[in-house]
Length: 306
Image 1 (tube, rainbow, N blue to C red):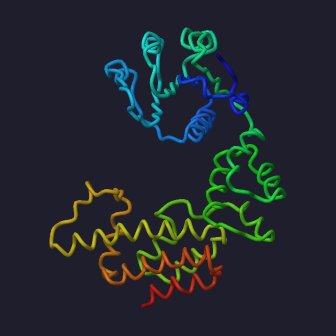
Image 2: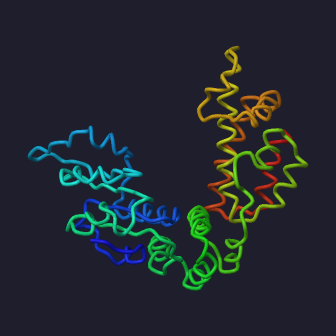
Image 3: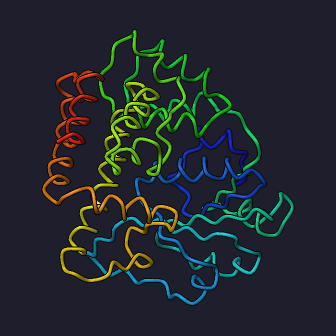
């Protein structure tokens, strides 16, 4: 069977185990993959077309419980067609940005009762897609309406905002507008992270002035990731060994290395442990004790001054 992307949200998927996403819109590819992943409640196992060709199909035995699998095979060609009839177990998602409606690959999927071809061409945010993304959040109707209008042409912006809603928890009607303000917490090398690693109180105050209430938990988690890295570096430093900057996991990019080198000379292990504990407590208090922005700022800055 063959459908366009907008029809995906009204199509029963349980009778298909082979899916092909084709077309020329990368964002619609992402939207389709996200929908399928959530719908099947599974993570992707990625394979190449060559790996699929060389991997024997597993045999199931009587009374064997097999976990559902979702295999993603990207950038396939017509050469994959002879393999498809042998894929009886599991669910497979194939992608091809080169395939078009009349190609052999799409024709095969269109004529099969267990295969679904999905055309990924430019499409605005659909009301059915929005409902699917927000179904577990139980949002007020007025807030849903504003969210849909604000992000109808910004799918990634909607995902970012929904992530903040999930982290934030309960909120009052007068706080709705905060979720439509642009985020300043973009990455772990931002102003606030640099300020805290450098113990720069003035720079931290400037950074706090750009953060709104809905960004507090992402901010705390970003700081926590950075200081967990710093703690690991302190452990290595304590051994007297040279720090293997190029092979660290998670990696520290060469532009960030001077920042962490300065932090190693300014933070002690016990201070970092106390700060990480403060971050965890602050997140809990924001969610369950309505910790205010000013109180949070004062609590974190105190860790810089101690």
